[in-house]
Image (cartoon, rainbow, N blue to C red):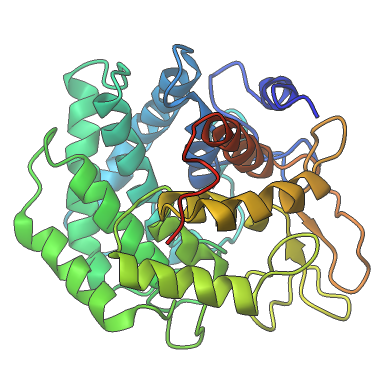
Length: 342
């Protein structure tokens, strides 16, 4: 299997403005903030300008709607359309459709990506206007009182307090603390919520695939909690073609929950973060099983049918699969790679 074929697939999904379409399917021919953050992770430690250009596109998007951010730095949104939107046209314009736009994790993810990009030497920040956007997004999260705010979460569904959303905001605020003014208490309040909520995702969900984000890429939970999260996701959510997002998920459910392909490499990446190399090696074959020869990795396998849905390839799926397999090549080449465990 040629791992680098993944880059060719991602390049086909890259837009002239530097952003990425979530998929080339008719249903997903849109730009999601969160999807871009995950899609460009392979470029974080490379000399390519793909990482920077994607963030320039997102900065330009935020500048277009800076007036909205300014309003909601001072007053909380009431209606979903008032939130910073989570999904846009490929021209990076808001869509006049009802949608679960209250996705605080997307803002946290963007801030995290900016900070970590700078720390890796990428010129993500172009000028003082970009810095001003970062500060305004921090103020936006403060106004929302993100640490106790119900939102639609990573899966854009029911409004409740999600650990994965709070965690993304904590990671984002920590990441940009050296760039703009972030009050210590703003981070501490989120950390307190996580201590209360974890290892649950929310009041209604004991566990959820989105919790893996707190281990990779955000790395914000202590080892004991991280081990509990991967244990629960592996035991309760892992399936043959991927992981279900949570029990009784109705999206593409035709007899059982849909199996999301990126769940397998994501688990592998989390085991790598934990130094559990023997466990990570188990996910090589599991991940390779869901990657077709052309590297067009699907979003999911339809529950009860065991066939991929039409959102193929999904940029996020391609990215996480590539990242995991590429990192495992590096691990395999080190003498301790196959012996270290915990």
